[in-house]
Image (cartoon, rainbow, N blue to C red; front, side, top):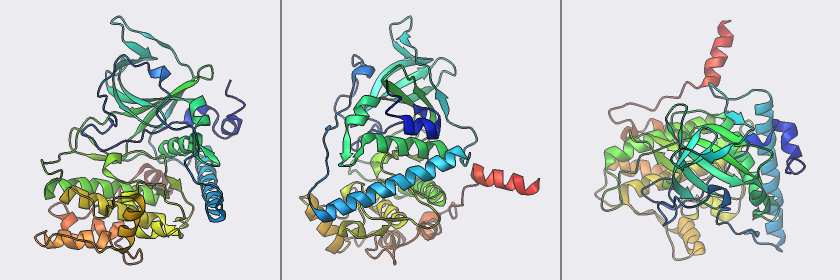
Length: 401
């Protein structure tokens, strides 16, 4: 019943199976858990429509806001066009493409646990504006997967801006995840979409670790360095593939049981062409917003991502945010005008790094390449090397043949 609504997608992608969504979370020990209900095994995955308000959350009436809305919508459409072109022409940086399954079989196993195809439900591990995240075990390989469950009809009704529904965010996020693969990025394994059902599912690798915070809410330098190296490596890969994440923060950084950090949640990410990473509206989390993004001017998406890395590092080391006001506007004012405060006793190299990342002038702000080579970051492990990704391997193989 959704084929008419999704005809533009069917023509470009072949099916709805390239869609998906991401929950929005608060900071918590479990990276997927963003509500107070830790485990609700009685919840029906297929009846959860999420908690989002199905009305526009953006202002209207003001000519400047309307102009910004038009510009943002144009940028979103350009991102989608670039992604569709990449997927249609096989320009993906993955060893194996994301599996697309167009047949959904729901049932129960011998123990009464709900099943989706070969996946057996274990427990709910998170919720968000668009749906829920549930832990499933595969009967094929006996591994655990985080499966996000969504309703197409809900996404079409839920407006995230006057001219855009949640479906736009969903489309971009899954198309971005379909073209990328990196050790420091959460991997999309499969999308399950049956045209006979309203529900569809994203099957993601299950990241089962926790942030190693101490009692003060901070990390030790060694742990923070390890986490930062992973974040920078993943973000360098994204920028090299013309992707702006747009919402780097601890909530969107997932830690494996071995301590590796993976970047997730691409719901507000954008894709650019060539070197044109200029954006206007910042869709990310306010406390991680760069000064230039608070001014309503055009800004570099890559530089804004780098600022967010700086705020994340500050939070990891000191257990608090560098600029936080009592209201949203107060927070923006402090980001733009207040000086950066760093304790005198902080490691001088670490101080230099934080000051470089949190330079209010984007032209003076450290680049990720400079961060990767910074003395505090290199430590005993050396500079962060550029990842030899699959598209580079393929290009190298073609040159030798």
